[in-house]
Each structure stands twice: as structure tokens, then as C-alpha cells.
Image 1: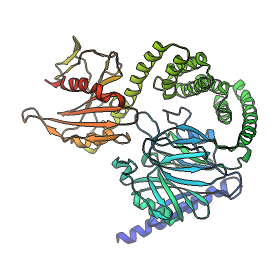
Image 2: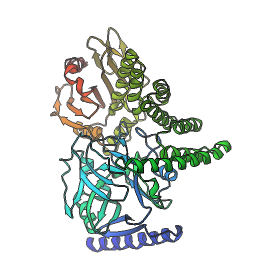
Image 3: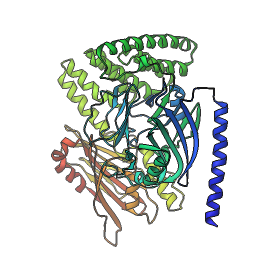
Image 4: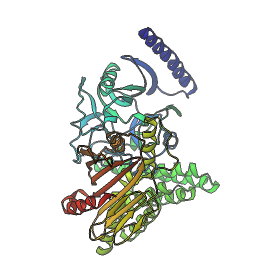
Length: 576
């Protein structure tokens, strides 16, 4: 009976989705068959497939990113509406804390972001495709490639299943378990397949699916709630969250506009002149919607002009000004920071510093501005200001990487924990107010029965969130953060910790969970997490209906120097 039901559901899925696909083809404008969409049923699972013929003139596969990249996300339909690809799917994983991708991204031959892990699809300007695993944390020479998107793990290699996710540093159970999936692969006929399925499948089942579709090489892309597919103006699968990046296919792209770092100087000059002329034309087109107050269209055109000529700071400045007018502070910060980078490369240090400061006023955690401002100060000969900026911005960066510092993420954790316990979540999220007293670098809260004593040279920072405390060393980039959140009765600390680290994409080492005295049931555990930018020692304490998270973090090179202070800070946190 169950098998018959399965066959009936499968047949219904094929009929419905095939009809939907046929409607899409009829509704879409007539185009060459270089990019198409279909629905297939492979190994018992339904999937949506976009196929791009890489032998067709004008087909270009490229990553597209959010307007506030890096460090910002955007709805799929908004991103695709601006970039106007023929088709697109969800791209590489990104951290839930700082919204930074985990893999390398190269667009038009420029390294837009270094992630340093996973497996990559890399494409040359003449559409030659290479799939390769990346050595963890090491920069690659992408000079011959126009397009690179690194995610993973590798699914297929030379026609065989080649799964080794832990070797590629993928350890998050939500990545390794069953989930909705997205993948990209190449067939022997030089057809690129971008595949998405809403069904819950394992990586092994996804690899077999890609093999069944005829792929010889393939990698996994981001999935789960991020699973998304776009085709000819329609959201085939709409993700449950905003996205940081996507892998897109464009048609009718002139070969004169395609380039990589290894082009001959004469070819590069010719391509640069062509793209510069195109950028100016697009920039001038943007003046009409600007004058009429159509800011969305103006942003689209200015963004396109800036992409065509990425060394022209004036395009980024005009884009930033327009985004400010539209009220999009985070996206404006990204444009100001990109203008600063261009000016910094041209040794225009004062102008660069001005643009970086404008970016940080709008988004203090903007990664480009955090890195660029100290460099601009040093170029101006202002070493003391550079060091002060590095210290302040390092603290911002460290705090943004902490899960517990994001109220929204803790709200999600609490809500999910109560949902699993089948209990209504408390109205006040994420935790009780910390309204205790400060005296001599000591925080004491008799109502919540906790005390936090700071080591020498540490101080509390100003705060807006009453359910968290932030501490810092006065002279070094060492930070502490204490969060209290609600927890359902009889919650398992291990489950709460698993939810806490989900999609953080950090290397996490766990200690055994310890229990307190029977008269005062307190559960404790410790995790050490590392990433290329941070080292964090996190202590979790569960007592009654509250979860306490004490995070102590610094840059990896400061780990040993901070170890004594971190021990004192951990010992100074006591339950009364």
C-alpha cells in the first residue's frame, strides 16, 4: 500500500510539474535553445533542472551577489530582478552570523571574496569548465578563470561519486544530513546543469541524482532553507531566507566583454575600452530614472555600470548616493567601501579614508571598510590613527562573528527550542533583562543569581541589549560577551548547543557536558571554535529556564596571549 501511494504521489508530481514547466515555456519569450528548464524524476526524487549549453555563443555563467555584499543578504527575486539573468540557483554557503560566504567568489576575473574551503566550479572566458577541491585556508591562482564559485562538497569527479565532506572541512550536521538541495554539474556534452530539489535528500542521493542526469563532474551548493531557483523572471523555488549570492546564467553576452586576469595585455586593453564605453552608456541611461525619482531602476543601471568598469570610483559613489536616497544604508555602505577600495588602489588615501568612514557610519561591521580604513590612514602617515582604527574595527568584527551577539539569531534558537518541546515560546525574547549593579569591574544580579568579575585591564562596554553584556580589554583585541536566553523546561543542553552552532561554518571542538550539584541543577559545557578571523572560547550554562552563553573571543594570532585573561573571565562568571 505504501509503495502504491509512493508511485501515485510520484506520478502526480511528474504530471503537475511537467505541466508547470510547459506553461513557463509558453509564457516565456521565444529564445534560442541555449538555456532551458525542465522537471525530471531521478532515482525516486523529483528535481528541477536548468540546462545551459556552454557551446552556444553568448552563454555566460557567473556568480551574482547581494547589493550589500560582503556581509549582507537580499531576497532572491530582488537580486535576480536587478541582475536580469536567464536563470539562477542558490550559490555558496554563508555564515548565519556575519553573512559572509565560505567559498571563493570570482566575478569577471576579479576575486570578490576569499573563503578558502570546499570545492569550486571554475569557468574560463571561452566556457571551459574545471571542478576542483581547494586546500583549506590557502589562496588559489584563479588568473585564467572568468568565473569561480566555491562551495561543496564535491559530488562527482570524472564520472564517479567522490564524496569526502569531512576532508573538505564540512562538519555541520545540517549540511551533512538530509535537506533540500542545490547542485551544479557538467555533462560529457558540455551542458551545464543547475539542479534543485525540494525533497529531503542526502549528499549521497544527490550525487546519484546528478549522475543519473548525465553529469560527470558536480559539486553541492547551498540548500535547506536557502534552496532557490529562478528561471525567465519566475521563482521556480523561492528560498525561505534572503541570499548572499547565486550562480546565474546569462545569454547574448558579447565575447568582447568577457575577460580574465591572464588575457594578453593587448586583449585586456581592448576589452577594457569596450567595457568602459558600455559602462558610460549605462551610466548615462541611469540619469533619466534618477531625474524622475525612479530609484530602483537607477540603482539597477548604476550597479551595472559599476560592474562593467570596476575601477571607476565615481560610479560607485553615485550608486552609494542613490542607495542613501533610497534608505538602504547597508547597501550604500557596501558601495562607499568599494569606492574606497578603488581610491586606495590608486594611492588617493585621503579620499579613500573619507569613503571608508562613510561606509562605517552606515554599517560599522562592513568588512571592506574595516580592512581599508587602517590601510588608508597608514598611507597618510597616521600610524596612531591606523592602530586605533584596527583595534576598534577588530572588536566590531569579533562581535559580529558571535552567534550570541545577534538578538535575532538567539530569538530563532529560543523559538525553535520551545517548538521542539511543544511549548509556546515566552513573549520576551531572547532572555530576562540584566538589570544588576556594576561596581569595581564586577556585575552582580541578585534577581538572576549571577556574578561576573572582570580581569584587570578589562571594562564593560555600553549596550543597547538588556539581555546581554559586552566586555573588552582596554588595549588588545580581546572581547567577552555574556547572553542570557530563555530555555524550555527539561531542555537538553547538547541540543541547544547544536542549534547554536548550526550554519556557523566554524571548526568546533566540544567538551563533555557536566552537571552541577543535585540541590542546584546546573548543566555546563564548553566549546572552542575557530575560523580564519577569530578564535572563540564559549561556555554554556543551563539552569532552570535560562541558558547563559559566555563567549570570549580574539583573533587567532592572539589566542595564546589572551588565554590567561580568558581563564580569569570564565572563572569570574559564577552562579550565586
